[in-house]
Length: 492
Ligand code: BES
Ligand code: ZN
Ligand code: ZN
Image 1 (cartoon, helix red, strand yellow):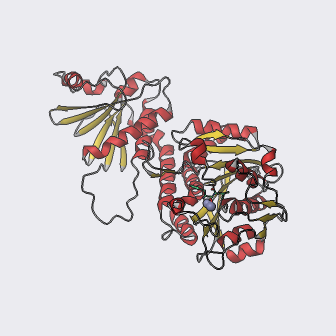
Image 2: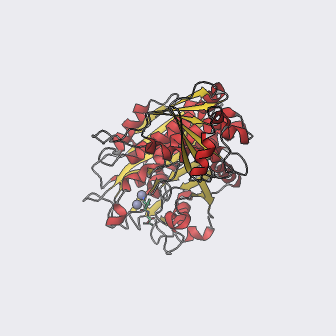
Image 3: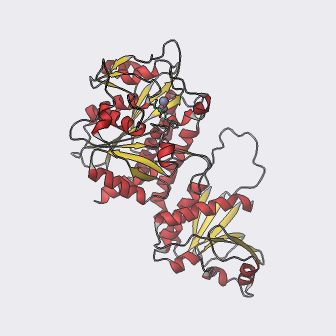
């Protein structure tokens, strides 16, 4: 779907979507077209009061107006407008039109925000909400879908300018959703690498470590997970170094398990479904670097994505294997299904040894328990540094979808990871606090003086049913959040 911005004093044509705030006053631009008071009549006849979820159709000559009620707002904010855009996107398919216009004059009249920003945030939300993945559909869609949306406002030029950075984020979210949706037979670790190379991200240097190189470095945790699979593992490194030369980079580490069968601790059938999305963290790192590079932010960022399949074969890692990590610490593998923390540990160590970051953030579909703890509303944030946690929470608050809730890292969680014969076990001896002990495991591989945060996105990276700004399926969680984090960081 394409977005265009136009001034609303031009001629209106075709189908026009117009959000209306509660109290249902008619958007001023539409009133100009309505000499006979048809809109007010239609509102009355259709009992339209402007409540969220209500719509009202009006025909004025060859114009088709579709009014849509909006949630009340206390403060006009970007996330509020983006959510409204998501709701508008939900209406698009029912219109069966090729092109629609969106009239923002009703919002501009009531909101204390420049017209350009209002229209841009609305367009961003519509973009988020109208994503679909049609790569493998061979049949034409039966109904007409919207191909072009023209957003009308009093200042089209300002809209275009305000939309530019948002469009970069939208692209990043789409790329993350695409990667996450690709099934494992189409996106192996090697194909993930090729797909990222094909994106040709501006200013991003792509480096790839193969199995041999990882063997030399002693990345045995990562390699042990990959042992049971036919597909070769890779470590994908994305360097974006546009900040000050002397400034230590921020390290982003994204879990890239292209399929998680559980390995020898094989998952039961119902849990095997959709385990193609166990690389959503890696996809979020790719999407973030895509957005940040398209925006040309002046930051030093390095993305490291360990790519493996967790499979079962005669070569697979056994339960209770003891493996030495790249850091030198030894790990007893109490459960082969707790593979994410293993590959992250080596990737995090590699990133720290190679790039000496001041901040490291990992993002991963780490624990199934997340769905029970925070549902599909929040990802969990764990951190060893208060200010970093606050910065991430602040960034999250500015997004429409990527919300965070902080959970604690109690020292007792580390004790639960004790092993009788190695430095630690990869699962907890106690049947509690599973997401926290997983986070605690990763913390064992954080070097001194590195500010670290861990984001567990297992509950939010895939939605069924969907939400206004994220249709059913991959959400691209993390791209908006991390990009906003870097935007804020550049300002401070
Ligand atoms: N990839 C899974 C976590 C997951 C489950 C993500 C469901 C999304 C939806 C992870 O590798 C895993 O299997 N974790 C185990 C750990 C356990 C064996 C200690 C879990 O959470 O059950
Ligand atoms: Zn697993
Ligand atoms: Zn996993």
